[in-house]
Image (cartoon, rainbow, N blue to C red):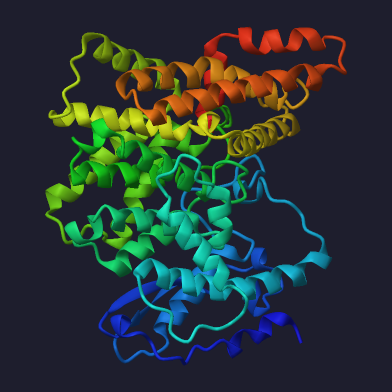
Length: 489
């Protein structure tokens, strides 16, 4: 008997906690899953629906938990809003890796073990005590995840480890924790069922086959945004409304990212490029996708209509600021404010501009992380670049800058990005907020750049032109490196 048929032995008939018995709501679900013995999930049509529950439904909590596990972790992506293949390319499988048949049983075993971890982690976030937990050797994971959340404001926060401890649900758990930590759930009277559904849908609308632009990147940006919100100048001036916008923008800033950059969408005549007239194509799509989920879940239905619309508009303003092609525009404005010393954080428009700059920093802060984390991100983003280059080669398209694996190395890509994009931005941020965190980030940036510089001669030493490659990488115009940023952001 296949292992997947052991699922019914899970205790779905256990008593539901009292805090759930007093709740009513609805949950979404997907109809097919490899966990239930489906022969080939990619060949099955996906259906979505909802299960309503109230105090008389004793199993709804566990149905909801099972639904989250199935939709998030079965190894394939459900049909997505706005992700349509063209030129024969399906972005849902663009970065997927083929797995040998021998690894499938082991993966199913890990899923079954991680199911208990997901249940316990969910209860941990709600502050509920453990009730007769199943002993499947997984309680240690919940304890470690809880310890990590207690240090979520540390710049050394390892989002990769946290993602493993939360069983691939780092974005949901981290964002929920931060909203609760700031008191925003209670202040804005957010319905817990709607909030969780919103966060789960946000996490699922990231393409986790993308090496870089996935839910873990969104969680990392959200954690960085939290670090910036705690900086003295911001902590003393930002309102709860500002903090809510900042966290939501960080969590949704790359929503439904296809794993390719704007120039690729334009030259392949993608419908998104036509829809947004070749202007901030990806950022407009991320924003509109986020608004769609807010409206679908009715997360802010308890607020006055004009307040809800204001959240949507300002959320768009923050996400659109991450368009790296407008980097110089925002940086020049920021530098002017700092030169004239006229930033007044008592002014709502000035606070919003500082939030935009904070989100821009959070979006490209990977080179400012400790080397162990920064190196992993650098490898992931370059892997995504090279995948796009391979697609362009396959379809005889002009290869985008930095996407040709034969002409670029990870080191050369990162050195150029740090020199022309990251250093100027974080130097100005340090002028604005001259704190220990800013100095730490600049220190890591310098060390990481030196580490990549030391690797570059070694990487290109086998070629006859090896000695000239590093110079070419760092002497190119910044406009070429901004092409990387448009993909990395």
